Length: 384
Ligand code: PMP
Ligand code: GLN
Image 1 (spheres, rainbow, N blue to C red):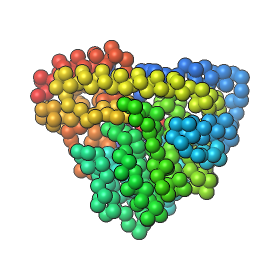
Image 2: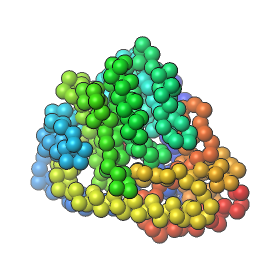
Image 3: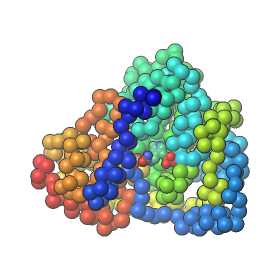
């Protein structure tokens, strides 16, 4: 048995969702939306299932979807990707796994930034990589240039960068993107850029990919997910984009992970990317309004937050809220006393975790968010 898996706990997302199901708590833990979800894309998938093929599509994805992904990035992010630079995967998770398997050999070092999405570290380890972990500054959530330089060595091959960032909902500062690009060019590194939250950036801001930085077009693997763009997280349909010599190697890793992904979902997402820009903008505005509603409610009951600029998430700062508990104890307590499930941010750290931060998902109906706020208001006096 592989000790990596034998000794591994179940992911915090599954663990908290299971606790919420068992206790009937409102689940503001794992990130999935109550809505909006895109009905046109769902209808297109049903039509495709009945009227088109249900057999294996091409290994790297249907040409319609690869064209649509390239077109969507051209319209929204001014990227000049060609369809043959897009490899369709079964979710962003598979893309991350395939990219790591394809791009490192055992003993290679991979830079990860804390807080880190939970899949990165185990996947780097399973690919035989050695993780070098760079802490983001715990106030600004920016990259410390000295910390970055110190982490890069002769065996460093890759960086994995998540922008917008889960869990905190921050967007990378342009100066940090420039710093990363310089480091990648100088040390001949490839960047795996997990940009699954790119369509959920708020307050009028627009996502800019690391791929647009000087020198990065040829050394970035840009990862996206239809689950996030259309509010359909269970679909597990994603993609990875890279210059042809890299894309060809990524495809080789993908071919023996899942080989391909359901064709009706691919047709539907292609149609959605080509026709649903207005819906995507509306969904973004609705999530922003949910964020504002939920944050105002948190602040009204004395819970301080880290500003959320993107994603489905906002993070409460327990220390700044005069709640003298650590994040895990707080999450345990509020499942029972408030009837609310949340995620301790320490789950996104491999080492030296902060213990005062808790993530909540605000992508829920107003009534659900209000019920959660009412539960937290009732529980808080007992926790202070
Ligand atoms: N990366 C990040 C940063 C995520 O937040 C998520 C899911 N929330 C994923 C990857 C996984 O995406 P998918 O469901 O498409 O595999
Ligand atoms: N990425 C989602 C979140 O952060 C969860 C994905 C999962 O459950 N694996 O909540």
